[in-house]
Length: 236
Image 1 (cartoon, rainbow, N blue to C red):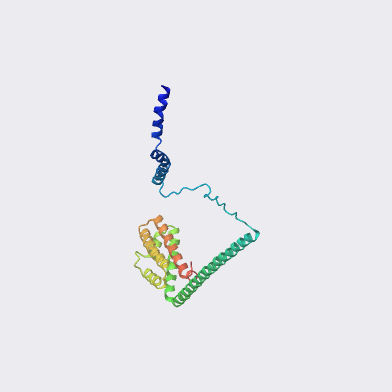
Image 2 (tube, rainbow, N blue to C red):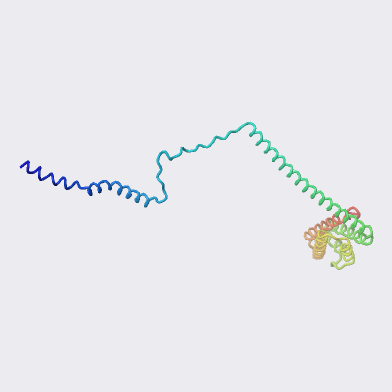
């Protein structure tokens, strides 16, 4: 039986070892290589496989070399730029200072011109200064009477209203000699306080009379100081 089994197996082995079978076996590695290549191309289409010999070593940056010459050049450049910026700042400051000085000189010239013009007007206003001198005398008498609680004497000096002759003449002088807004403001304050003074004296109100008198005298003194008449009127 053993001999019969070997004889039967021999033709089976010889028939299975045909050239077509050998060809299929030899083609199997090629098919596997193509499959692997397709798989690689499907996942990473733009990536090329490189062998270890194709990889280049990493490039190391060259060290920065700092020498005494480079440091000196940097320091000198910074120093030059610093001097240039300081020079520009000094030049700008000098220009601004010159402009300020010029504006100040112009203001001084304008103020001096105004003073000269005002002095000319005051020098020629002898009649108006007479009106103002009479005003000073009347205010002095009224103040003395109020200080003594003598409102009847104060009333006789003031008159019964602001429409008296000496008040009208005083306002003529105010109008001619007042040029600035501050001077005109003091004139308005004086006239308002004078009206209150006359009303208080007429009503025999001693406390209100004192308050109104102080307000009137203060406004008049401020006006004479602004106009330059303070030293030219007696009694101030």
